[in-house]
Image 1 (tube, rainbow, N blue to C red):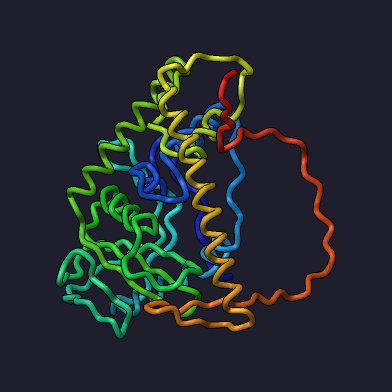
Image 2 (tube, helix red, strand yellow):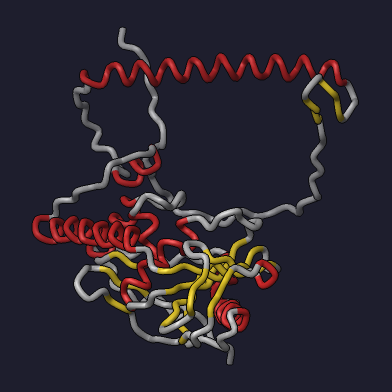
Length: 320
Protein backbone atom coordinates (compact mmCIF):
# COMPACT_ATOMS: atom_id res chain seq x y z
CA UNK A 1 0.00 0.00 0.00
CA UNK A 2 1.27 3.47 -0.87
CA UNK A 3 2.34 5.49 2.16
CA UNK A 4 0.16 8.50 2.98
CA UNK A 5 0.93 11.68 4.86
CA UNK A 6 0.81 11.48 8.64
CA UNK A 7 -1.96 13.29 10.50
CA UNK A 8 -1.49 16.18 12.91
CA UNK A 9 1.12 15.30 15.52
CA UNK A 10 1.81 18.65 17.21
CA UNK A 11 -0.09 19.96 20.30
CA UNK A 12 -2.84 22.53 19.74
CA UNK A 13 -1.78 24.98 22.46
CA UNK A 14 1.70 25.84 21.15
CA UNK A 15 2.89 27.08 17.79
CA UNK A 16 3.57 24.46 15.12
CA UNK A 17 5.81 24.80 12.09
CA UNK A 18 2.90 25.17 9.66
CA UNK A 19 1.54 28.10 11.72
CA UNK A 20 4.77 30.10 11.92
CA UNK A 21 4.17 32.15 8.75
CA UNK A 22 0.73 33.22 9.98
CA UNK A 23 1.99 34.12 13.46
CA UNK A 24 4.70 36.27 11.89
CA UNK A 25 2.14 38.01 9.67
CA UNK A 26 3.53 36.44 6.50
CA UNK A 27 0.55 34.32 5.42
CA UNK A 28 -2.07 36.11 3.27
CA UNK A 29 -4.64 33.41 4.08
CA UNK A 30 -4.34 33.37 7.88
CA UNK A 31 -3.72 35.95 10.57
CA UNK A 32 -2.11 35.54 14.00
CA UNK A 33 -5.59 35.88 15.50
CA UNK A 34 -6.84 32.96 13.39
CA UNK A 35 -4.20 30.76 15.02
CA UNK A 36 -4.92 32.07 18.52
CA UNK A 37 -8.69 31.70 18.09
CA UNK A 38 -8.32 28.13 16.85
CA UNK A 39 -6.24 27.18 19.89
CA UNK A 40 -8.76 28.75 22.27
CA UNK A 41 -11.72 27.17 20.45
CA UNK A 42 -10.11 23.75 20.88
CA UNK A 43 -9.51 24.40 24.60
CA UNK A 44 -13.21 25.27 24.85
CA UNK A 45 -14.13 21.95 23.23
CA UNK A 46 -15.00 23.41 19.83
CA UNK A 47 -12.44 21.80 17.56
CA UNK A 48 -12.95 22.88 13.95
CA UNK A 49 -13.15 20.15 11.29
CA UNK A 50 -9.89 19.56 9.40
CA UNK A 51 -9.69 21.31 6.02
CA UNK A 52 -10.53 18.97 3.14
CA UNK A 53 -10.09 20.97 -0.06
CA UNK A 54 -8.59 19.45 -3.23
CA UNK A 55 -5.06 20.82 -2.88
CA UNK A 56 -4.67 19.19 0.54
CA UNK A 57 -5.94 15.86 -0.81
CA UNK A 58 -3.54 15.81 -3.73
CA UNK A 59 -0.69 17.20 -1.66
CA UNK A 60 -1.08 14.27 0.73
CA UNK A 61 -1.52 11.78 -2.12
CA UNK A 62 1.72 12.74 -3.88
CA UNK A 63 3.75 13.74 -0.83
CA UNK A 64 6.00 10.68 -0.77
CA UNK A 65 6.56 10.83 -4.53
CA UNK A 66 7.58 14.50 -4.29
CA UNK A 67 9.96 13.78 -1.40
CA UNK A 68 11.54 10.80 -3.14
CA UNK A 69 12.07 12.64 -6.41
CA UNK A 70 13.50 15.66 -4.58
CA UNK A 71 16.10 13.55 -2.81
CA UNK A 72 17.01 11.63 -5.97
CA UNK A 73 17.68 14.96 -7.71
CA UNK A 74 19.88 15.94 -4.80
CA UNK A 75 21.80 12.69 -5.23
CA UNK A 76 20.78 11.37 -1.81
CA UNK A 77 18.41 8.45 -2.46
CA UNK A 78 15.05 8.15 -0.70
CA UNK A 79 14.28 9.94 2.60
CA UNK A 80 12.64 8.77 5.78
CA UNK A 81 8.98 9.80 5.57
CA UNK A 82 7.35 8.20 8.64
CA UNK A 83 8.02 9.58 12.13
CA UNK A 84 4.83 9.06 14.21
CA UNK A 85 5.83 11.89 16.54
CA UNK A 86 6.28 15.62 16.77
CA UNK A 87 9.67 17.26 17.26
CA UNK A 88 9.92 19.81 20.10
CA UNK A 89 12.34 22.67 20.61
CA UNK A 90 14.58 22.06 23.60
CA UNK A 91 13.55 25.21 25.49
CA UNK A 92 10.87 27.17 23.59
CA UNK A 93 7.14 26.26 23.22
CA UNK A 94 7.49 25.24 19.57
CA UNK A 95 6.80 21.91 17.87
CA UNK A 96 6.93 20.66 14.30
CA UNK A 97 6.04 17.62 12.29
CA UNK A 98 8.18 16.50 9.36
CA UNK A 99 7.39 15.33 5.86
CA UNK A 100 10.84 13.91 5.24
CA UNK A 101 14.43 13.73 6.49
CA UNK A 102 17.54 12.36 4.85
CA UNK A 103 21.23 12.11 5.71
CA UNK A 104 23.71 14.14 3.71
CA UNK A 105 26.60 12.42 1.96
CA UNK A 106 29.23 15.17 2.07
CA UNK A 107 28.75 16.36 -1.49
CA UNK A 108 28.85 20.07 -2.33
CA UNK A 109 25.60 21.40 -3.74
CA UNK A 110 25.18 24.44 -5.99
CA UNK A 111 22.23 25.87 -7.86
CA UNK A 112 21.35 23.66 -10.84
CA UNK A 113 18.38 25.00 -12.86
CA UNK A 114 18.35 21.92 -15.12
CA UNK A 115 17.45 19.83 -12.08
CA UNK A 116 15.21 22.53 -10.61
CA UNK A 117 17.60 23.06 -7.67
CA UNK A 118 17.94 26.59 -6.31
CA UNK A 119 20.07 27.57 -3.29
CA UNK A 120 18.29 30.49 -1.66
CA UNK A 121 20.53 31.87 1.10
CA UNK A 122 23.91 30.39 0.18
CA UNK A 123 26.08 30.10 -2.93
CA UNK A 124 26.99 26.51 -2.12
CA UNK A 125 26.31 24.03 0.67
CA UNK A 126 27.95 20.83 1.85
CA UNK A 127 25.19 18.26 2.38
CA UNK A 128 26.14 16.88 5.79
CA UNK A 129 24.07 15.65 8.72
CA UNK A 130 20.28 15.62 8.90
CA UNK A 131 18.54 17.43 6.03
CA UNK A 132 14.86 18.35 6.31
CA UNK A 133 12.72 17.93 3.19
CA UNK A 134 9.28 19.60 3.12
CA UNK A 135 6.79 18.71 0.37
CA UNK A 136 4.42 21.25 -1.18
CA UNK A 137 1.98 21.02 -4.09
CA UNK A 138 0.28 24.00 -5.72
CA UNK A 139 -1.85 24.81 -8.74
CA UNK A 140 -0.13 28.16 -9.11
CA UNK A 141 2.40 29.01 -11.80
CA UNK A 142 6.12 28.96 -11.10
CA UNK A 143 7.09 31.71 -8.66
CA UNK A 144 10.05 34.06 -9.01
CA UNK A 145 10.64 33.66 -5.27
CA UNK A 146 9.30 31.13 -2.79
CA UNK A 147 6.76 32.90 -0.53
CA UNK A 148 7.26 32.79 3.22
CA UNK A 149 3.99 30.91 3.70
CA UNK A 150 4.89 28.12 1.24
CA UNK A 151 7.26 26.35 3.61
CA UNK A 152 10.04 28.93 3.80
CA UNK A 153 9.45 29.88 7.46
CA UNK A 154 8.11 26.45 8.36
CA UNK A 155 11.44 24.96 7.28
CA UNK A 156 13.39 27.25 9.62
CA UNK A 157 11.15 26.13 12.50
CA UNK A 158 11.75 22.49 11.56
CA UNK A 159 15.51 23.05 11.60
CA UNK A 160 15.18 24.73 15.02
CA UNK A 161 13.39 21.73 16.50
CA UNK A 162 15.58 19.02 14.96
CA UNK A 163 19.01 20.62 14.98
CA UNK A 164 19.32 20.26 11.22
CA UNK A 165 21.43 22.90 9.47
CA UNK A 166 20.03 22.45 5.94
CA UNK A 167 16.50 22.10 4.64
CA UNK A 168 14.70 21.81 1.33
CA UNK A 169 11.22 22.90 0.29
CA UNK A 170 10.20 20.75 -2.68
CA UNK A 171 7.32 22.40 -4.55
CA UNK A 172 5.44 20.67 -7.36
CA UNK A 173 3.85 23.38 -9.52
CA UNK A 174 0.73 22.46 -11.53
CA UNK A 175 1.72 18.81 -11.40
CA UNK A 176 4.52 19.21 -13.95
CA UNK A 177 7.33 21.40 -12.54
CA UNK A 178 9.29 20.40 -9.44
CA UNK A 179 11.45 23.07 -7.82
CA UNK A 180 13.78 22.43 -4.91
CA UNK A 181 14.49 25.50 -2.76
CA UNK A 182 17.48 24.76 -0.54
CA UNK A 183 18.13 26.76 2.64
CA UNK A 184 20.73 26.84 5.35
CA UNK A 185 19.68 27.80 8.87
CA UNK A 186 19.01 31.51 9.34
CA UNK A 187 19.67 32.58 12.97
CA UNK A 188 17.90 35.93 12.56
CA UNK A 189 14.69 34.38 11.23
CA UNK A 190 14.89 31.57 13.77
CA UNK A 191 15.12 34.08 16.61
CA UNK A 192 11.98 35.80 15.33
CA UNK A 193 10.24 32.43 15.32
CA UNK A 194 11.32 31.71 18.91
CA UNK A 195 10.19 35.16 20.08
CA UNK A 196 6.80 34.66 18.41
CA UNK A 197 6.41 31.19 19.94
CA UNK A 198 7.15 32.54 23.44
CA UNK A 199 4.70 35.41 22.95
CA UNK A 200 1.97 33.03 21.72
CA UNK A 201 2.56 30.79 24.73
CA UNK A 202 2.20 33.82 27.03
CA UNK A 203 -1.21 34.60 25.49
CA UNK A 204 -2.33 30.98 25.86
CA UNK A 205 -1.24 30.87 29.51
CA UNK A 206 -3.11 34.12 30.20
CA UNK A 207 -6.28 32.53 28.83
CA UNK A 208 -5.76 29.33 30.81
CA UNK A 209 -5.27 31.31 34.03
CA UNK A 210 -8.23 33.71 33.86
CA UNK A 211 -9.95 33.19 30.47
CA UNK A 212 -8.69 36.58 29.31
CA UNK A 213 -7.89 36.69 25.60
CA UNK A 214 -5.13 39.04 24.52
CA UNK A 215 -5.70 39.32 20.78
CA UNK A 216 -3.02 40.34 18.35
CA UNK A 217 -3.48 43.76 16.69
CA UNK A 218 -6.44 43.59 14.30
CA UNK A 219 -5.38 44.61 10.79
CA UNK A 220 -8.33 43.57 8.57
CA UNK A 221 -12.11 43.70 8.71
CA UNK A 222 -12.21 39.92 8.20
CA UNK A 223 -9.98 39.48 11.23
CA UNK A 224 -12.28 41.68 13.32
CA UNK A 225 -15.37 39.78 12.15
CA UNK A 226 -13.81 36.43 13.04
CA UNK A 227 -12.83 37.58 16.54
CA UNK A 228 -16.03 39.44 17.41
CA UNK A 229 -18.36 37.12 15.52
CA UNK A 230 -21.51 38.08 17.47
CA UNK A 231 -22.89 41.47 18.46
CA UNK A 232 -24.30 42.24 21.89
CA UNK A 233 -26.85 44.77 20.65
CA UNK A 234 -25.47 47.51 22.92
CA UNK A 235 -24.48 51.04 21.92
CA UNK A 236 -21.07 52.41 22.87
CA UNK A 237 -19.54 55.88 22.53
CA UNK A 238 -16.77 56.34 19.95
CA UNK A 239 -16.54 60.12 19.86
CA UNK A 240 -12.74 59.83 19.66
CA UNK A 241 -13.18 57.90 16.38
CA UNK A 242 -15.32 60.55 14.64
CA UNK A 243 -12.46 61.58 12.33
CA UNK A 244 -11.89 57.98 11.25
CA UNK A 245 -15.60 57.51 10.51
CA UNK A 246 -15.55 60.70 8.45
CA UNK A 247 -12.49 59.41 6.57
CA UNK A 248 -14.31 56.15 5.78
CA UNK A 249 -17.30 58.07 4.39
CA UNK A 250 -15.00 60.28 2.29
CA UNK A 251 -13.14 57.28 0.89
CA UNK A 252 -16.42 55.59 -0.04
CA UNK A 253 -17.53 58.78 -1.82
CA UNK A 254 -14.19 58.95 -3.63
CA UNK A 255 -14.44 55.31 -4.71
CA UNK A 256 -17.96 55.84 -6.06
CA UNK A 257 -16.86 58.98 -7.92
CA UNK A 258 -13.87 57.21 -9.45
CA UNK A 259 -16.00 54.18 -10.34
CA UNK A 260 -18.48 56.44 -12.16
CA UNK A 261 -15.59 58.13 -13.97
CA UNK A 262 -14.10 54.76 -14.92
CA UNK A 263 -17.46 53.59 -16.26
CA UNK A 264 -17.84 56.75 -18.36
CA UNK A 265 -14.37 56.52 -19.96
CA UNK A 266 -14.70 52.79 -20.69
CA UNK A 267 -18.12 53.26 -22.27
CA UNK A 268 -16.75 56.07 -24.46
CA UNK A 269 -13.90 53.87 -25.74
CA UNK A 270 -16.23 50.89 -26.30
CA UNK A 271 -18.56 53.08 -28.36
CA UNK A 272 -15.60 54.07 -30.54
CA UNK A 273 -14.38 50.47 -30.91
CA UNK A 274 -17.75 49.06 -31.94
CA UNK A 275 -17.23 45.42 -32.87
CA UNK A 276 -13.42 45.67 -33.04
CA UNK A 277 -11.51 43.44 -30.63
CA UNK A 278 -8.32 45.54 -30.47
CA UNK A 279 -7.51 49.24 -30.66
CA UNK A 280 -4.23 51.15 -30.67
CA UNK A 281 -4.40 54.26 -28.52
CA UNK A 282 -0.98 55.88 -28.76
CA UNK A 283 1.26 54.07 -26.23
CA UNK A 284 -1.47 51.59 -25.32
CA UNK A 285 -3.17 48.59 -26.90
CA UNK A 286 -6.78 48.20 -25.81
CA UNK A 287 -8.54 44.81 -25.91
CA UNK A 288 -12.30 44.36 -25.71
CA UNK A 289 -12.63 40.61 -25.62
CA UNK A 290 -15.35 38.08 -25.06
CA UNK A 291 -15.96 35.30 -22.54
CA UNK A 292 -17.27 31.86 -23.47
CA UNK A 293 -19.34 29.95 -20.94
CA UNK A 294 -19.85 26.22 -21.23
CA UNK A 295 -23.32 24.83 -20.71
CA UNK A 296 -23.89 23.82 -17.08
CA UNK A 297 -26.55 21.25 -16.08
CA UNK A 298 -29.15 22.22 -13.51
CA UNK A 299 -27.95 21.68 -9.96
CA UNK A 300 -29.78 21.16 -6.72
CA UNK A 301 -28.11 23.25 -4.02
CA UNK A 302 -27.57 21.14 -0.88
CA UNK A 303 -29.30 22.30 2.27
CA UNK A 304 -27.35 24.43 4.73
CA UNK A 305 -28.16 24.99 8.41
CA UNK A 306 -29.12 28.47 9.57
CA UNK A 307 -26.23 30.55 10.89
CA UNK A 308 -25.31 34.10 11.80
CA UNK A 309 -22.05 35.79 10.89
CA UNK A 310 -20.68 39.23 11.62
CA UNK A 311 -20.45 41.50 8.57
CA UNK A 312 -17.02 42.46 7.19
CA UNK A 313 -17.99 46.10 6.65
CA UNK A 314 -19.63 49.03 8.45
CA UNK A 315 -22.86 50.85 7.60
CA UNK A 316 -22.51 54.54 8.39
CA UNK A 317 -25.01 57.39 8.32
CA UNK A 318 -24.84 60.88 9.71
CA UNK A 319 -26.93 61.82 12.76
CA UNK A 320 -29.81 64.22 12.31
